[in-house]
Image 1 (cartoon, rainbow, N blue to C red):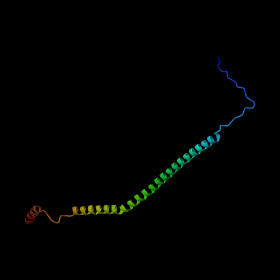
Image 2 (image 1 turned 90 degrees about the horizontal axis):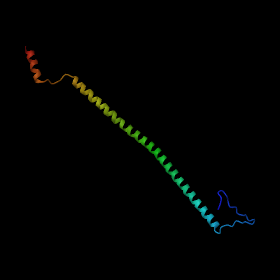
Image 3 (image 1 turned 30 degrees about the horizontal axis):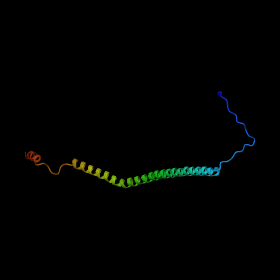
Image 4 (image 1 turned 180 degrees about the vertical axis):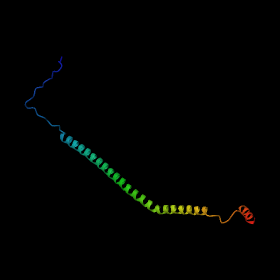
Length: 121
């Protein structure tokens, strides 16, 4: 029976040699190839993300600039129309007030009879 905490000690040979695995070079080549492929995938995904970010940000900036310009053009072209509409509205209102404040040119016949009777007396 073994006691807890004890280790087996193996004797060390003086002429102990490390023998390489026969396919060690092929395994190293495969490992290098896998590392290279992983690095390529990582670089490719980084490049995709960078391109997407650049295109996204440039699209936002370009869209903002074009949107602002289009709004300016629309506002600039609609201002004369709006100004003309306001001016016409003011002219119509002034004409209406002028007509309403003027004495009527045609009088109601019912109103004229009492006036004629008063003038005849």
